Image (cartoon, rainbow, N blue to C red; front, side):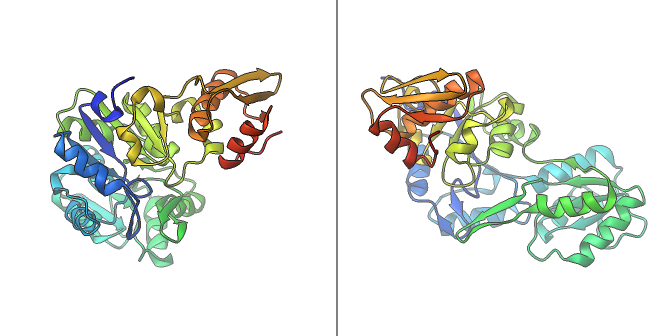
Amino acid sequence: MSEALQEVYDAVLFDLDGTVYQGSRIIPGAAEVMRELRDVRRPVRFVTNNASKTPEDVVEHLRGLGVDAEPAEVSTSAQAAARVLRERLPSGASVMIVGAPALEHEVEATGMRPVRKASGVDAVVQGHWTETGWSDLAEACLAIRAGAFWVACNVDATLPSERGQLPGNGSMVAALRAATGAEPEVAGKPEAPLFTTAAAAAGASLALVVGDRLETDIAGAVAAGLDSLAVLTGVATPGRLLVAAPAERPHYIAADLTGLSAPAGELRVGPKPGWRVRAEQDVLAVSAHDSSDQLELLRALCHFAWETGVTAVRALDEGAKAALGDLGLTPS
């Protein structure tokens, strides 16, 4: 039996929303996983595309949910956006903020001047904030049309919450994209720097990224050259995993963070002895051999779908039919 997944890597980089918690609700098992990692002295980093909170805010939220954390362990897209601005603009440059006070603080900390109106600004930086309204987007639209450099903290279309998926920063970015015809530079996930910086801060030579969103968490890991674990507690679904583009494919799949203590070989995407999967023209034919574990089947299906490009599935027996139903995959 292979080592537990958490033992293979020398640091674990966690997404937050949809992976550790959903809004004000801790995802079951997450706090216990974090304590176990602390007990074995495995460095962790919390890497979030949410630009509305400072590292201190993130730590306060995590501690309120029973997860121990320190500000130095938090990497935010607001910090990444401030770094992009610092690299492109001189000290004292005027930057229009479309986002929370936390984003304003990160920009000010780099020596630039945050403002809230469009007149004469050098750049616009946009991050998630529940208070952003039409007037904020209107000011940003004027500045971008006038030639201001535009940075988006992230382009997540939705934001997980305990009530379901809500509009994320990407939805607001889409509105400005439509109004200006411009394209922002994206600072956070899925770009690599947020992960490479977090891994370096943890002193890791072999870090694992854990997240729920293929187009940001997993794509960012791929861009950074890091292995990744996709969990099914947020946005990612079995159907979405089957059709994932090469740049969005995780090495491992688990139901939730408790998978970190399972053997790495069991979690890895690939053929599984308990299931028989074969490509028959335009369908993946599935039969149960010695397993009823639907996640084991999902890992096998992803392997064959990614190898062949075939994503339709067909059950050859009742065991396969039941497992595909549990995964929400409709047999052909």
